[in-house]
Image (cartoon, rainbow, N blue to C red):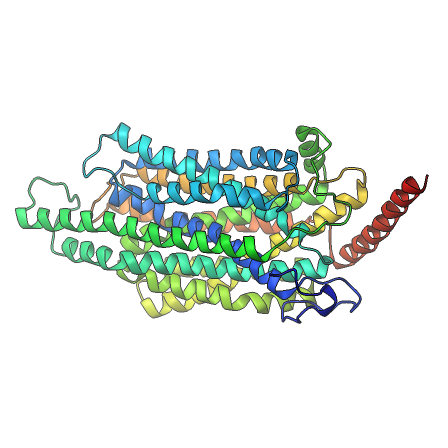
Length: 517
């Protein structure tokens, strides 16, 4: 499908930076198919990030301490599986359909089933032990199978063909589709659940109690709340079925539209070095370490805000019924701004563009916490925040191939380590996400959050405000400081490409000499 297009007659696209016309390109159909293949990860992870906390607390009505364990340990397990799957991918053989794509294909049905079960509440009333075990097991299983999709998919960027400019263009398409997937996941989930959350809000507005389980509630009030809870649990399952269907369709497009191509100084073969040796080599590569930790702290900031948004808007601003519109504004702005950031990336360089984009985020979250309860202002500020969010989606993933190329130039004999670099990169991102949402939920437990309550004490509201602004701002500026130490600027990046081209020619010359002899 994609590979029938001649490399020399590549369809021009707006995200392809200006480059030498002789440079190899990537067919547009292959770029789009590759970009669509990344949507399942963001479809599901955006929904988990936005709704899993409030689902466990207010729908399952799990104690905040147990919910924090699921959120943290689940993401810790998710992070641990990345280097393990990266190792298994690197050790796997190349098949007729490639080395990476088989992992995506064979993990697909297991990922779909476990995602649906993760949002399914098997009983109306469950013991704490059964409730914790059910959701923890299915969360871990889903994260495992999604990792089997995401690690090889992330590495696939290096095997699309083309040069660095072409891969940057493919990354732009990928990030555009992933931001759109985040938007789609959040909107679909919000639209399906919005009616039921609004129903609970109306019921709660008629009560004068902070604890909906109070025995003093009248029978009609209890009946309305129980009915609302049952409908909401059913709605979460329906939303999971819809997103699981999209998961399948996106993987199908990837399978039909992308064929793995050999990358410079790579063979798509089995890794020759011991895995731990490869990890040590990667973690001793200075640009990689600084990029990882800059991304870690920046991602921590964004994910802490994301994880607490639903609770913040529901209880601190009383705008819970309009949460879906705020998310829609944020993600639409992020999606539409991807081409703009791609243009700035080409003109200003990756580091400068990163500084500009991330710096916008701090005043946005500060304004969200302190402006009051005005929906139009919230939506306007959320649109600005969406522009900053797009940078976090685009730039680190665009900078990672530069780091891998730099490593190849400096270590030409160490081949096929791409899965190691990408799996460790994803590991730190997931670990940071688990840490942020797990600690946030644990804080809520200690300040007195009551699952299923209509109203919460002032200490809970204060904690939500702190978790939405001061803490993320500190984390963000820590990340920006680490990015300042990142050594690959535009001049160095161009030199890497020249050195890589020379290394490829030398490697080809050695191979020819070996064949001749």
